[in-house]
Image 1: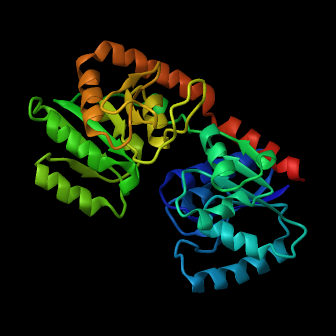
Image 2: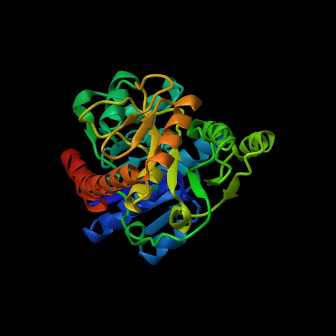
Length: 356
């Protein structure tokens, strides 16, 4: 089997890390795997794993890039003749879809990793011979909002690399450190976290906030931080570099899945990495009563864009340390059971074999 995995670029991010893990995992299974993308910090890592990479930048979403890249990809596909072209983002999916016109030898697979806006543009993700969703709720979204054929949709949970998170040694530090980790975009909700910490610090000046990540919304966050005098520490790098110092991770996403009992949601890579490290987590799901939070066996959950609920949940975590430690341990075991790299790789290969 010969597989091409296509993303805009291979820089730091959840989709990129998942693509790296999938490519390396499939290579271990003896599958001829190539990543098609623009450059990024994962390219040298791919090369060390001897995973082939084709430089085809699709991170600049312009008509010129679309036309030129579609032509180049069509030539590459005709020459290479892969069995599968698996597109894991919208712009690459449009390029892949048109590059495969009249191509009868390569099957078109898509993945959906989040709640995409602009349905006309996003509906390309529903056109795959198989549509891989990373959670049950996203599978439902693909069917109901993007028009995917239910018979073509498959749920494959992302895999999380357990090393080095399981081996993280906590570092002693003063105060209580709360962190948000992820790409700095508005939908990550870090502005709500800064507002919540500003309120909490009125009575708990020992609370410190780290925000780890890069992105276009960073300047907005810095302005808000200065306005509220929160004294946030902004950091860049990989999560495992900072997790040893963190007492509580907050993932306050503005756009998120609904809370459905007995269903496994995708809460974001930073949540599951923190849980592997034994760090308690507060995150968001739709369907929680406003200004309230709920406890599950593995995390505390608040409604999205609800600062009052976030304040209550954070104070509860700070004031109930032993209970929160138990929840954190449950979280670690949950991630180990449901989000293994090998499980993701095997299920994805099974989807490929269906269409072949």
